Length: 330
Image 1 (spheres, helix red, strand yellow):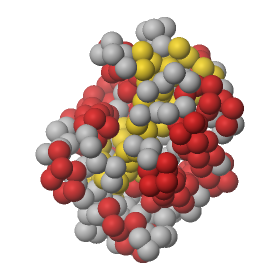
Image 2 (cartoon, helix red, strand yellow; image 1 turned 180 degrees about the vertical axis):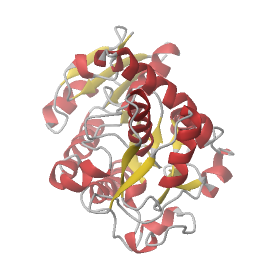
Image 3 (tube, rainbow, N blue to C red; image 1 turned 135 degrees about the vertical axis):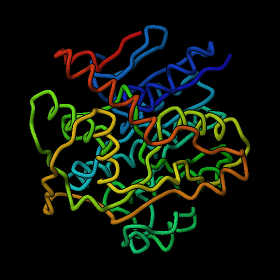
Protein backbone atom coordinates (compact mmCIF):
# COMPACT_ATOMS: atom_id res chain seq x y z
CA UNK A 1 0.00 0.00 0.00
CA UNK A 2 1.05 3.60 -0.64
CA UNK A 3 1.03 6.87 1.30
CA UNK A 4 -0.98 9.81 -0.03
CA UNK A 5 -1.48 13.46 0.88
CA UNK A 6 -4.90 14.95 0.13
CA UNK A 7 -4.64 18.74 0.19
CA UNK A 8 -8.12 20.17 0.60
CA UNK A 9 -9.35 16.95 2.22
CA UNK A 10 -12.03 18.86 4.11
CA UNK A 11 -13.70 19.91 0.88
CA UNK A 12 -16.27 18.18 -1.30
CA UNK A 13 -14.17 16.18 -3.78
CA UNK A 14 -11.19 15.85 -1.43
CA UNK A 15 -13.32 14.06 1.14
CA UNK A 16 -14.47 11.49 -1.40
CA UNK A 17 -10.91 10.86 -2.61
CA UNK A 18 -9.81 10.35 0.98
CA UNK A 19 -12.61 7.87 1.59
CA UNK A 20 -11.74 5.83 -1.49
CA UNK A 21 -8.04 5.65 -0.71
CA UNK A 22 -8.65 4.62 2.92
CA UNK A 23 -11.10 1.94 1.79
CA UNK A 24 -8.39 0.59 -0.53
CA UNK A 25 -6.07 0.26 2.48
CA UNK A 26 -3.72 3.16 1.75
CA UNK A 27 -2.15 5.41 4.37
CA UNK A 28 -3.58 8.91 4.00
CA UNK A 29 -2.48 12.31 5.28
CA UNK A 30 -5.21 14.98 5.11
CA UNK A 31 -4.73 18.73 5.18
CA UNK A 32 -7.22 21.59 5.03
CA UNK A 33 -7.44 25.18 6.21
CA UNK A 34 -10.78 24.61 7.97
CA UNK A 35 -10.97 23.26 11.52
CA UNK A 36 -11.59 19.50 11.46
CA UNK A 37 -15.18 19.82 12.72
CA UNK A 38 -16.07 21.72 9.52
CA UNK A 39 -14.68 19.17 7.07
CA UNK A 40 -17.43 17.67 4.92
CA UNK A 41 -15.98 14.22 5.57
CA UNK A 42 -13.32 13.35 8.14
CA UNK A 43 -11.71 10.01 8.90
CA UNK A 44 -10.17 8.78 12.12
CA UNK A 45 -7.90 6.42 10.13
CA UNK A 46 -6.22 9.39 8.42
CA UNK A 47 -3.62 11.73 9.87
CA UNK A 48 -5.44 15.06 9.82
CA UNK A 49 -3.96 18.55 9.79
CA UNK A 50 -5.77 21.88 9.96
CA UNK A 51 -3.24 24.35 8.59
CA UNK A 52 -2.59 26.91 5.86
CA UNK A 53 -1.00 25.38 2.77
CA UNK A 54 -0.19 28.81 1.38
CA UNK A 55 2.79 28.60 3.78
CA UNK A 56 5.77 26.69 2.35
CA UNK A 57 6.80 25.25 5.73
CA UNK A 58 3.38 23.64 6.13
CA UNK A 59 3.66 22.09 2.67
CA UNK A 60 7.02 20.63 3.61
CA UNK A 61 5.52 19.22 6.81
CA UNK A 62 2.56 17.43 5.23
CA UNK A 63 4.55 15.98 2.30
CA UNK A 64 7.27 14.39 4.43
CA UNK A 65 7.26 10.63 3.91
CA UNK A 66 4.44 10.86 1.34
CA UNK A 67 4.62 9.19 -2.08
CA UNK A 68 1.66 10.75 -3.91
CA UNK A 69 -0.18 14.08 -3.66
CA UNK A 70 -3.68 15.15 -4.68
CA UNK A 71 -4.04 18.94 -4.60
CA UNK A 72 -7.76 19.65 -4.27
CA UNK A 73 -7.23 22.78 -2.15
CA UNK A 74 -8.39 26.23 -3.22
CA UNK A 75 -10.57 29.08 -2.10
CA UNK A 76 -13.65 28.75 -4.28
CA UNK A 77 -17.40 28.44 -4.47
CA UNK A 78 -20.28 29.13 -6.81
CA UNK A 79 -20.48 32.10 -9.17
CA UNK A 80 -21.59 34.50 -6.45
CA UNK A 81 -18.47 33.73 -4.43
CA UNK A 82 -15.85 33.76 -7.18
CA UNK A 83 -17.13 36.98 -8.76
CA UNK A 84 -16.94 38.80 -5.43
CA UNK A 85 -13.72 37.31 -4.03
CA UNK A 86 -11.26 37.45 -6.91
CA UNK A 87 -8.17 38.25 -4.82
CA UNK A 88 -8.94 35.48 -2.33
CA UNK A 89 -9.38 33.02 -5.19
CA UNK A 90 -6.10 34.03 -6.80
CA UNK A 91 -4.18 33.60 -3.56
CA UNK A 92 -4.74 29.85 -3.97
CA UNK A 93 -1.87 29.98 -6.46
CA UNK A 94 0.38 29.97 -3.39
CA UNK A 95 -0.99 26.56 -2.37
CA UNK A 96 -0.15 24.97 -5.69
CA UNK A 97 3.22 26.70 -6.01
CA UNK A 98 4.40 25.78 -2.53
CA UNK A 99 3.09 22.22 -2.77
CA UNK A 100 4.97 21.75 -6.05
CA UNK A 101 8.16 23.08 -4.42
CA UNK A 102 7.66 20.77 -1.44
CA UNK A 103 7.03 17.81 -3.73
CA UNK A 104 10.37 18.34 -5.47
CA UNK A 105 12.20 18.72 -2.15
CA UNK A 106 10.54 15.63 -0.62
CA UNK A 107 10.82 13.57 -3.81
CA UNK A 108 7.10 12.94 -4.37
CA UNK A 109 6.42 10.37 -7.09
CA UNK A 110 3.27 11.91 -8.59
CA UNK A 111 1.26 15.11 -8.16
CA UNK A 112 -2.37 15.79 -9.14
CA UNK A 113 -3.81 19.28 -9.65
CA UNK A 114 -7.56 19.90 -9.83
CA UNK A 115 -8.17 22.59 -12.42
CA UNK A 116 -11.47 23.99 -13.67
CA UNK A 117 -13.56 24.75 -16.72
CA UNK A 118 -13.22 28.40 -15.66
CA UNK A 119 -9.86 28.46 -17.48
CA UNK A 120 -11.54 28.65 -20.89
CA UNK A 121 -11.41 31.71 -23.12
CA UNK A 122 -14.49 33.79 -22.36
CA UNK A 123 -14.95 34.86 -25.99
CA UNK A 124 -15.82 31.24 -26.82
CA UNK A 125 -18.63 31.16 -24.25
CA UNK A 126 -20.82 34.11 -25.23
CA UNK A 127 -23.74 32.13 -26.69
CA UNK A 128 -26.22 29.94 -24.83
CA UNK A 129 -25.56 26.74 -26.78
CA UNK A 130 -21.95 26.62 -27.92
CA UNK A 131 -19.72 23.86 -29.29
CA UNK A 132 -18.30 21.78 -26.46
CA UNK A 133 -14.98 23.18 -25.29
CA UNK A 134 -11.81 21.31 -26.23
CA UNK A 135 -8.66 21.51 -24.16
CA UNK A 136 -6.91 23.89 -26.57
CA UNK A 137 -9.82 26.36 -26.30
CA UNK A 138 -8.16 27.76 -23.17
CA UNK A 139 -5.80 29.72 -25.43
CA UNK A 140 -5.32 32.51 -26.25
CA UNK A 141 -5.79 33.04 -22.53
CA UNK A 142 -8.84 34.97 -21.32
CA UNK A 143 -10.25 32.90 -18.44
CA UNK A 144 -12.76 33.72 -15.70
CA UNK A 145 -11.29 36.68 -13.85
CA UNK A 146 -9.66 35.74 -10.56
CA UNK A 147 -10.44 32.06 -10.06
CA UNK A 148 -9.91 31.09 -13.71
CA UNK A 149 -6.56 32.88 -13.92
CA UNK A 150 -5.34 31.11 -10.79
CA UNK A 151 -6.26 27.73 -12.24
CA UNK A 152 -4.69 28.42 -15.64
CA UNK A 153 -1.47 29.73 -14.10
CA UNK A 154 -1.30 26.70 -11.80
CA UNK A 155 -1.72 24.37 -14.77
CA UNK A 156 1.35 25.99 -16.34
CA UNK A 157 3.26 25.63 -13.09
CA UNK A 158 2.58 21.89 -13.14
CA UNK A 159 3.77 21.68 -16.72
CA UNK A 160 7.00 23.53 -15.98
CA UNK A 161 7.72 21.53 -12.82
CA UNK A 162 7.43 18.43 -14.97
CA UNK A 163 9.77 19.90 -17.57
CA UNK A 164 12.30 21.46 -15.18
CA UNK A 165 12.28 19.09 -12.19
CA UNK A 166 10.94 15.84 -13.69
CA UNK A 167 7.98 15.86 -11.29
CA UNK A 168 5.27 13.56 -12.63
CA UNK A 169 2.07 15.65 -12.73
CA UNK A 170 -1.58 15.13 -13.65
CA UNK A 171 -4.12 17.88 -14.41
CA UNK A 172 -7.88 17.64 -14.90
CA UNK A 173 -10.29 20.45 -15.70
CA UNK A 174 -13.42 19.69 -13.69
CA UNK A 175 -16.77 20.82 -15.08
CA UNK A 176 -19.31 21.59 -12.30
CA UNK A 177 -19.06 18.60 -9.98
CA UNK A 178 -22.08 18.00 -7.72
CA UNK A 179 -23.58 15.39 -5.42
CA UNK A 180 -24.24 14.54 -1.75
CA UNK A 181 -21.93 15.66 1.06
CA UNK A 182 -21.26 19.02 -0.57
CA UNK A 183 -22.11 22.66 0.12
CA UNK A 184 -25.77 23.53 -0.41
CA UNK A 185 -26.06 26.81 1.49
CA UNK A 186 -23.97 29.67 2.84
CA UNK A 187 -22.99 31.34 -0.45
CA UNK A 188 -20.38 28.91 -1.83
CA UNK A 189 -22.80 26.34 -3.26
CA UNK A 190 -23.04 25.68 -7.00
CA UNK A 191 -26.17 25.68 -9.12
CA UNK A 192 -27.40 22.06 -8.66
CA UNK A 193 -27.20 22.21 -4.87
CA UNK A 194 -28.50 25.78 -4.67
CA UNK A 195 -31.53 25.03 -6.83
CA UNK A 196 -32.31 21.79 -5.01
CA UNK A 197 -32.22 23.71 -1.73
CA UNK A 198 -34.44 26.50 -3.04
CA UNK A 199 -37.03 24.06 -4.40
CA UNK A 200 -37.00 22.00 -1.20
CA UNK A 201 -37.40 25.05 1.02
CA UNK A 202 -40.20 26.34 -1.18
CA UNK A 203 -42.02 23.02 -0.91
CA UNK A 204 -41.55 22.70 2.84
CA UNK A 205 -42.71 26.29 3.41
CA UNK A 206 -45.44 26.27 0.76
CA UNK A 207 -43.79 29.08 -1.18
CA UNK A 208 -44.85 29.58 -4.79
CA UNK A 209 -41.65 31.06 -6.24
CA UNK A 210 -37.86 30.96 -6.08
CA UNK A 211 -35.16 33.46 -7.04
CA UNK A 212 -33.05 32.55 -10.08
CA UNK A 213 -29.81 34.37 -10.90
CA UNK A 214 -29.84 35.56 -14.52
CA UNK A 215 -32.55 34.81 -17.06
CA UNK A 216 -32.33 31.03 -16.63
CA UNK A 217 -31.23 30.54 -20.24
CA UNK A 218 -27.51 30.30 -19.46
CA UNK A 219 -26.18 26.75 -20.02
CA UNK A 220 -23.67 24.46 -18.34
CA UNK A 221 -22.81 20.78 -18.11
CA UNK A 222 -22.77 19.09 -14.70
CA UNK A 223 -20.87 15.99 -13.57
CA UNK A 224 -21.97 13.72 -10.72
CA UNK A 225 -19.35 13.00 -8.06
CA UNK A 226 -19.11 9.25 -8.86
CA UNK A 227 -18.14 10.01 -12.46
CA UNK A 228 -15.66 12.61 -11.24
CA UNK A 229 -13.94 10.09 -8.98
CA UNK A 230 -13.82 7.41 -11.66
CA UNK A 231 -12.16 9.75 -14.16
CA UNK A 232 -9.81 11.22 -11.56
CA UNK A 233 -8.41 7.87 -10.43
CA UNK A 234 -8.03 6.65 -14.01
CA UNK A 235 -6.05 9.75 -14.99
CA UNK A 236 -3.96 9.65 -11.82
CA UNK A 237 -3.04 6.00 -12.31
CA UNK A 238 -2.39 6.46 -16.04
CA UNK A 239 0.74 7.67 -17.79
CA UNK A 240 -0.19 10.99 -19.42
CA UNK A 241 0.83 14.35 -17.99
CA UNK A 242 -1.28 16.32 -20.48
CA UNK A 243 -4.30 18.40 -19.43
CA UNK A 244 -7.74 16.79 -19.84
CA UNK A 245 -11.36 17.83 -19.55
CA UNK A 246 -13.46 15.88 -17.08
CA UNK A 247 -17.14 16.66 -17.41
CA UNK A 248 -20.41 15.88 -19.09
CA UNK A 249 -21.41 16.76 -22.64
CA UNK A 250 -25.06 16.99 -21.47
CA UNK A 251 -25.47 20.76 -21.82
CA UNK A 252 -28.61 22.14 -20.15
CA UNK A 253 -29.98 25.55 -19.28
CA UNK A 254 -30.69 26.58 -15.70
CA UNK A 255 -34.40 26.59 -16.60
CA UNK A 256 -34.14 23.00 -17.82
CA UNK A 257 -32.42 21.95 -14.61
CA UNK A 258 -35.13 23.64 -12.53
CA UNK A 259 -37.74 21.68 -14.48
CA UNK A 260 -35.91 18.45 -13.65
CA UNK A 261 -35.82 19.30 -9.95
CA UNK A 262 -39.50 20.27 -10.00
CA UNK A 263 -40.30 16.83 -11.38
CA UNK A 264 -38.08 15.10 -8.81
CA UNK A 265 -39.68 16.99 -5.92
CA UNK A 266 -43.18 16.96 -7.43
CA UNK A 267 -43.50 20.69 -6.80
CA UNK A 268 -43.65 23.54 -9.32
CA UNK A 269 -42.71 27.15 -8.69
CA UNK A 270 -42.66 30.51 -10.41
CA UNK A 271 -39.20 31.90 -11.18
CA UNK A 272 -38.11 35.38 -10.10
CA UNK A 273 -35.26 36.15 -12.48
CA UNK A 274 -32.59 38.38 -10.92
CA UNK A 275 -30.72 39.89 -13.84
CA UNK A 276 -28.35 41.89 -11.65
CA UNK A 277 -26.88 38.82 -9.92
CA UNK A 278 -23.59 37.09 -10.93
CA UNK A 279 -24.25 34.62 -13.72
CA UNK A 280 -20.90 33.90 -15.37
CA UNK A 281 -20.44 33.03 -19.04
CA UNK A 282 -23.45 32.49 -21.28
CA UNK A 283 -22.79 28.86 -22.19
CA UNK A 284 -20.26 26.10 -21.44
CA UNK A 285 -19.95 22.33 -21.81
CA UNK A 286 -17.16 19.77 -21.89
CA UNK A 287 -15.69 18.04 -24.93
CA UNK A 288 -14.47 14.65 -23.64
CA UNK A 289 -13.02 13.23 -26.86
CA UNK A 290 -9.43 13.49 -25.65
CA UNK A 291 -9.96 11.53 -22.41
CA UNK A 292 -12.35 9.15 -24.16
CA UNK A 293 -9.64 8.30 -26.68
CA UNK A 294 -7.05 7.80 -23.93
CA UNK A 295 -9.09 5.90 -21.34
CA UNK A 296 -12.49 5.16 -22.91
CA UNK A 297 -13.89 7.33 -20.10
CA UNK A 298 -17.34 8.84 -20.34
CA UNK A 299 -19.72 9.93 -17.58
CA UNK A 300 -22.24 7.20 -16.80
CA UNK A 301 -24.75 9.09 -14.63
CA UNK A 302 -27.27 11.40 -16.29
CA UNK A 303 -28.03 14.79 -14.80
CA UNK A 304 -31.56 13.68 -13.91
CA UNK A 305 -30.34 10.61 -12.01
CA UNK A 306 -27.61 12.56 -10.24
CA UNK A 307 -30.04 15.28 -9.22
CA UNK A 308 -32.42 12.69 -7.76
CA UNK A 309 -29.65 11.45 -5.43
CA UNK A 310 -28.53 14.97 -4.57
CA UNK A 311 -32.08 16.23 -3.96
CA UNK A 312 -32.80 13.39 -1.53
CA UNK A 313 -29.63 14.06 0.46
CA UNK A 314 -30.25 17.81 0.71
CA UNK A 315 -33.92 17.22 1.57
CA UNK A 316 -32.86 14.96 4.45
CA UNK A 317 -30.42 17.60 5.78
CA UNK A 318 -32.98 20.41 5.64
CA UNK A 319 -35.91 18.35 6.89
CA UNK A 320 -33.94 17.02 9.86
CA UNK A 321 -33.30 20.55 11.12
CA UNK A 322 -29.80 19.45 12.21
CA UNK A 323 -27.30 21.52 10.23
CA UNK A 324 -24.34 19.59 11.70
CA UNK A 325 -25.28 16.46 9.76
CA UNK A 326 -23.68 17.90 6.63
CA UNK A 327 -20.30 17.21 8.29
CA UNK A 328 -19.77 13.44 8.28
CA UNK A 329 -17.24 11.63 10.49
CA UNK A 330 -16.01 8.09 9.90
